[in-house]
Length: 295
Image (cartoon, rainbow, N blue to C red; front, side):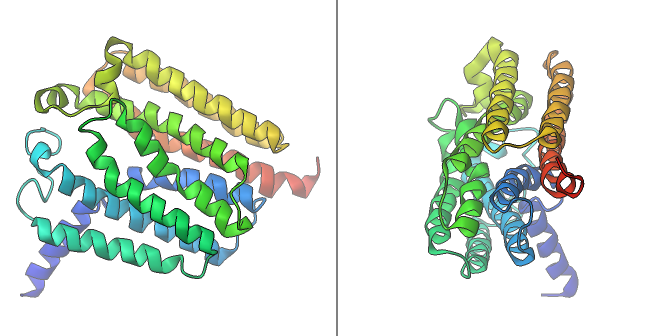
C-alpha cells in the first residue's frame, strides 16, 4: 500500500470517527467536565483531566463508528448521511468493527490507574454506547437513551475522584438526559421525512406536532434540575450566571426551530455546544475565580 493509499484510508477513518465534526465530542465532553469540576471543587488533577478529555474523544469516536455500522442500511437512504464511509462502501464492516474495538480498548487502557468503581461504570458506558444505535428501531424516544450514554462520564468522574457516586451525580445525569432530548430532537427534526420513510423511530416523530413544545420543556427541565444542583451544592452567583446565559441561548434556539426549517433546526442542534460551555463557564467562575475574591 502506497503512502497516498494509506493517507486515503486514514482520511476515511477520520471521517468515520467524526473527527472533522467536533460538535458531538463537545456535547459529550461538557457534562463530563461539569461532573469533574463539581467532584473536585474546581481543582481536578491534570492527569485525571487528561484521562477524561482523551477518553471522551476516543469513546465518542468509537460510538460514531458503531452507530454508522448499525445504521449502514439506513444511512444510504438518507440525504444527509448517504456519503458516510460505510454506507458509501468506502470502508468495510470488518474494518469498522476493528476500528471501534481498537478505540474502545484504548479508552479502557486509560482508566486502568483509576478506582475499580470506574472500571465497572465504564462497562456500563460501553454497553450504552454500543446499544444506543439499535434503540432507534424500537424505542419511541431514543434521545433519552443517548442522554444516558452521553452523560455517563458524570458518575465516572465522581467515582474517579471520590470512589463513590453521590446523589448529585445522578441528578446531573438526569439533567443531561433532558438536555440531550432537547438538542437531539432538534437534530431529528432535520431528518424527520427520511426517518419516516425508512422506519426509524425518533423523538421528532414521536412528539409530532408537539415537537417544539417538547424541546422547550426538555430544556426547561434540564436547567431547573441544574439550578437544584447548584442550590444543593451551595453554589453562588457565578454558577447561576452561567445558567442565565444558557437560558438566553435556549430562547434563541426557539427562534431557530419554530419554523421547523431543516437548516435552522440543524443550526440549533450545533449551537448547543454553547449551552454546555455556558454552564461549564459558570462552574469555572464559581469554583475557580470567586474564591480568590471571597464571598
